[in-house]
Image 1 (cartoon, helix red, strand yellow):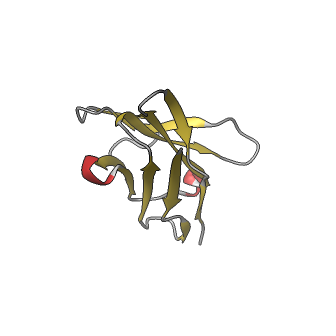
Image 2 (image 1 turned 120 degrees about the horizontal axis):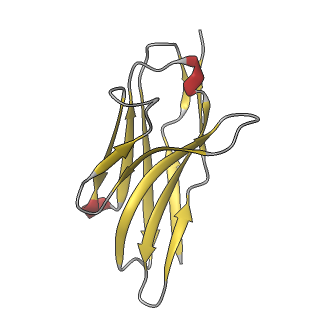
Length: 119
């Protein structure tokens, strides 16, 4: 069984910073791609950033140069450093992790963490 636990969301003023974490635990054999998505109220879930097992990254145009995705393979954890936050970054942020167990492979979602950017 695999679990993902997210942390780090909250309320921040425009221009501020937050760091999200997503830690995977359980019967994990290996982890491939990891990523962050977000869903604002009334909108579809959208890609924010991804990182491969080799460290290659990809970002949505709206967050380039402001957000940085990273991972700690020893801790099975993916991070999202968010700087220069804007009100339009307000959303529930979800991590998505591609996990291989001994007998299975699947994409696992975190529970979501609220990020609110407001003065």
